[in-house]
Image 1 (cartoon, rainbow, N blue to C red):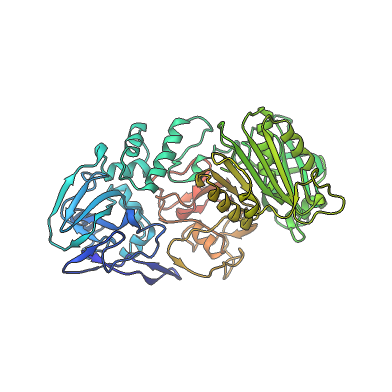
Image 2 (cartoon, helix red, strand yellow):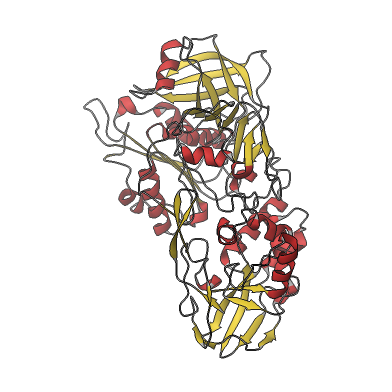
Length: 585
């Protein structure tokens, strides 16, 4: 039996708060609902909790790794487990099995979720990937009956889980290719399976149910990025500006068409494209992403740009681009897309956040949808209200469309009851007061604080959190499990030290171009050095938390991912640029 409380550990110039360092203890300890007495977890988002109270690993796997890795220093607890056991192999223990040890009763809930910290503890960075690839993950137990346990006690099996699905089999269903629909359905029939893994299995089942709906590839159970269809063309291609229209005092739209006059591939409502903006002179191009705001499937694209006072790209577009000019553009990308269905749709936006949800509104109007559709928008006043007439006309064309627009500071020229419904912000409090349908899919776009507050309000009203979809402009939220640091990270910047001599890496969402430095082990490390917000967990190409769109270019992997990402995507944790690249980051 091994326990340990979380501690701060230095790692790669950072501080990790982790409970992976366990010490073997003798004598009885209470197994409680959340922990063995004296044990704790540093990152409760990925470890611990009622479903992951006790981690189990096997002596047989110790013997395997001693030979596989050529190690003779593997002592009990080095894999971060609480119980080091003789027997109970991963290819025999089933999800839902119940075992009595001493006075406590335990139930198997899920395989271990492999993260970088087991590699940190063992001094073997590949370990997270190796545990999956060699089918030896270990597993978690839930405490059904609390009681004292002690090393040396017998493990008595009381019942076998329904479906008899082993830990190794379930782990392979999620992390490896080749699973069947029957396996996913079996997993979902196991009541003991933890909610997190149930969610992943449901997503896999949805992917099985719609195998050709969008041509997506990769494992949707691991990453939302895998649900995006492959890009319609590689890299960037020239598009011609056919029209320029003002939408408000600070927003204007560009209509783009194929340079050869052929129809552009249809985009999904809610997607964006990435363009290269030439600021003039010898300056390198600026890479920016803009949501598609027009009707999908019309053979052309419309992007709408807000001109910021110090926005280099937006000001360059307004000042220099004219009808007939060409812009280099990458294919439509993104997973913030209108889902099929007949349930209600709620479209909420603030300011220029209207652009992606306007494309959704266009799609609903084009299809003469009979769904109940709500259009809720917030603007400062009529001069800063883009697409005002366009959105009113689209809502009016729907059989069950309804709209409410709110101006935070209306002017004397703005007409109450015509241009706007009420003065004030589109706030969480206001949303809570609306009779929104609780079975709706909601799509939000706007400032981060707006979306955070409105999301909470919608969930409070009874909407399923999984049906509240958000899209942000700029970099997304970081996910760096266990890393201690400043509450607010600095803005993305050039990395410290001398500039690299390698190919240019463009972080499109962060507006940053950085030369590659061959001393870095991965694109993830470069992004971290630049304080570009990143998401990761395993750092060895197994969990796909870091999967994102590669807008142009190619990468080399070292090590190779356990399973490849979706077409058009990459894993930044184990890749380096093979030339100039543009990342959706």
